Image (cartoon, rainbow, N blue to C red; front, side):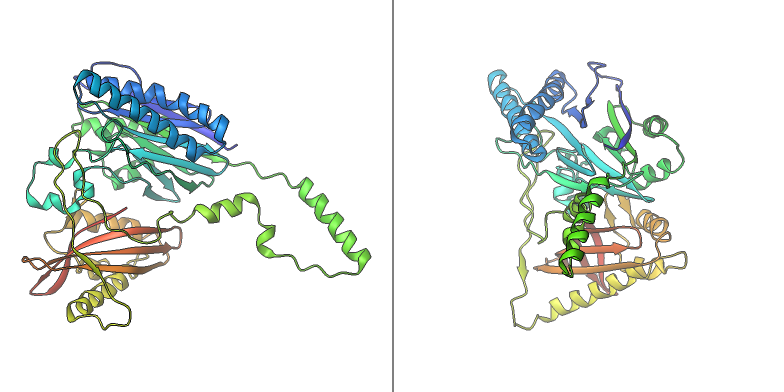
Length: 436
């Protein structure tokens, strides 16, 4: 097992009902939970998640030997208990939760609600989860001038639906990776880029945890916040004595028998290598239309369902499709040319509208984050696959969805991407984008 450095902290808000911890960290299982609503019902939900999930997880793990299956079973059982309690008292109660289990170099993780999981890796920050909120499920709702509190309303979480959308994913870990687990109370005030910058200035997970919480409070955080940080100092080198001995016997037999062995290169990979290859790309490989958000615990969840249409095989794309595809080719090329200290960030940002707003950032904020991140890369390569182009609205806006395969000199990932485009006098521009 890797040598771990662990720091988990709960900062109680001004109106907190309790000072109890909202995290669990033991036997390679890590959990962060937050009750929704800030009242005693939210506290009941948080307590149910905090105490119920770990015991059920280890109970199922001892029987099923599958971390993913054990995680799903534990969350489903706690969710069922919350729904029964809601029915009994006649009032709503819900919780947001994120769960991580470490097995060797593989991290199993899942979440419900707006508690997030990040990985700090090689000077990059990767958000491994996507918030189950109105603002995230319907990224363009924020452009309608709606109350920001409604945008934070949950579309999924523990105690909200009978069948929550629990998806367990895996992530290949490496030496010096750092995993962050945090509640919405912190990420409402600190952007991903701010978290990354602060992490580069702190040595040790305890100092980093203290600094992030301090900065969030300095920016106005008043609610309770829970933050967990797991640092992987180093992984042990797999023992090779037994493998070497077996290989020597095989070679000796081959020489005595006069046979020339041609080993399958793939079969000689270590289990860790095989596992890393298996999980390096997210499980989702084809972009699917996102469902309309259901009723939320924090507030109403307006529905949004684009009328997407795929290009039919063998049929020539209409003029509109050709325009949009050409624009996206130019955007992709401009993005690739932002790599390095001399990267052309201006051409890339020219693809974005002045009214661009996404993930809480306007165009200037987006430019600053991309410039800071991409100047450290030697090269960037982007591929867009399975494109779905929606029908244009009366305001000349079109939603486009595709599978984005991103590779750079120090990182690679496949992501479902959604762009909202608007056509003006200077052509198509991006007014919002989100990834899942």
